[in-house]
Amino acid sequence: MNTEIAAGGRPFVHEHSAHCESGVTSALFRDKGLEISEPMIFGIGSGIFFGHLPFIKMVGLPISTFRSQPGSVFRKAAKRIGGKFVTKRFRNPQKGMDELKRVLKSGQIVGLTTNIYWLSYFPNRFRFQFNGHNIIALRETETGFRVSDPILEYPVDCLTDDMERARFAHGPLQPHGFMYYPESIQPNPDLRTACVKGIKDTCNMMLKIPLPIFGIRGMRFLAKRIIKSQDKLGFNEACRQLGNIVRMQEEVGTGGAGFRFMYAAFLQETAELFGSEDLARLSQEMTAIGDVWREFAVVSARIIKQRGKAEDNFSKAGGLMLICADREEALFRELHIIVRKLKA
Amino acid sequence: MKVNEVPQDDITYYEGKKRACYAINDKGKYVIVTSTGWNAEEVFNGLAVAELAANLEETRKAVLKGLKSPLAYHMERRQLIPTILAKTAGIATFRVKRHLRPGIFNKLKPSVLERYAQALAVSMEELKTVPK
Image 1 (tube, each protein chain N blue to C red):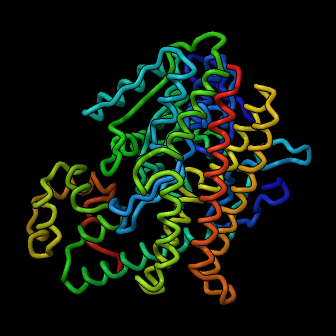
Image 2 (image 1 turned 180 degrees about the vertical axis):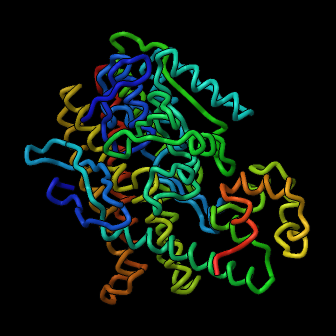
Image 3 (image 1 turned 60 degrees about the horizontal axis):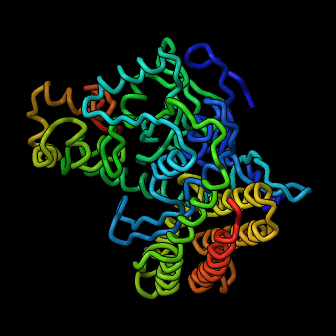
């Protein structure tokens, strides 16, 4: 916890978070007086998800995602909690930068979507061309901007040039200088209803999308691919693909295991909100599932380093993902039933 | 994951920074714990970084052999591909691809080079050469 002076001379408390988008959204709400945690935003915004897109490639490798589409957590949480939000995109970078400065001068901190490669305040090995990284601009400084980047422990300085490049980078999911902030928040929002909506949406996304690459079906689809990958692609290529999956899990955003633990934290908070022992129990199950995802990462690392025993092979890795699929399916089916009985 | 299970593997490339993780404390409640990194994570990051470096090295050698222009090197260095560089520099994609050929690149006007330098965040001098 550390307090800084932000736009309009008002104090801002930087909270270290696990997920950039959830961290920014919860900080923007807190700035307007609503005390709400990152896991609550993540759950209300239906952030947990799974998808494997074999046809979309970054650096020649298919994309796996352990969270919902970048931008949707903010959008859904904002809608469900209620209030007036401003969102803007720009064709002209100069206009985008001028508007950012204008809003900051008016005393409002601003959420921004950026390309993490161009943010030089990050250690080098964090800097990949990825267009979904969210940060908050706190105020203008002599060299650029004071930034609260939720995945770092403390606020940092960001150079103007970096900020412009990061906001207006091109490529998949390009941000177009996307900026967002609440104008006002509903006083005393109905968080229970928001949680119910968030949970129902998540259950639908995980269980009911009629395509084999999303949700629980997506996990099974990918798991089977992993099991066959060494025979189909050879050891080296199979390792490359497996490595990319686990990178998406552990590094980008915050990782599949990280997202699972964060969702378990959400279920724990919601259990308290509703006084529900069922939700508390599901929170514990989600924690256990997160641990299986981590085991998947550990086994995958051993395969790649070839340091494991013979049984650390692609079959085992894929098998662990199938276990995750089975347990998440059971969890979301039960959650779907429980949520309909909750008194909002 | 319990608080005492949160990895603290002091990963060098974190450069002293820490990540936030959700873990369960001894009262069974979720709390945020900072982590100095995880060995397993380093394997995957390392794989990706090594591959990018290896490809970049191939390109660097190709430039020194006169098979590709320095533009190809600097584009790859910034993890970009021709279509994205094209939009960033404001130059048509088919032209960017032509400019990856050394013969063509060497004849480019300073105004075009300036656009690439700006798009790739390198100086004009840097743009025309690659490290030996």
